[in-house]
Image (cartoon, rainbow, N blue to C red; front, side, top):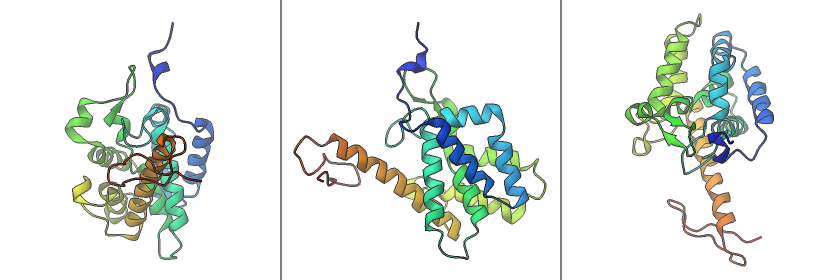
Length: 219
């Protein structure tokens, strides 16, 4: 007898190690209201379990169990690596990066033998779902309102970078721009590695990749 999810692709990186990297990033946030928000999200057993299992997509990038966790940790670490400007608010940056795809825990399904999109995911989409969830959770966090909350929500709203790519607004803060660039880099680099792996033996260039062309697959 098999569990239905036994047939689903799984993250190639150990989930416990990724979770510890996420917890380490959470501990870097020192502003009380933001630290409390992250605690409300990631200390909740049900929410944590969903976050650890959810895919980041049903195709395109990180389309496997644990993909959301893998992608989120990578995006946050990349955003921090680019935050060399002392004017960047690292607490807002880390909070927004860790939560930027939170809505995917409701957008995607992974209970059957294939990854799928939920009805709620099709109706609302992960950006809006994430903003709804964060806004609801913020109501119970003292000091998390007004401008501070709006700056976090702006990261969620703008992380696709363009209205043409599905964001309702474009990045207008340093922190939002860094999260968008880290998100784009992580997804594109993932696609590049997939393309390299798909190249035929002896071929120096990959098959065509949408929006990216052919990828160098040589040594």
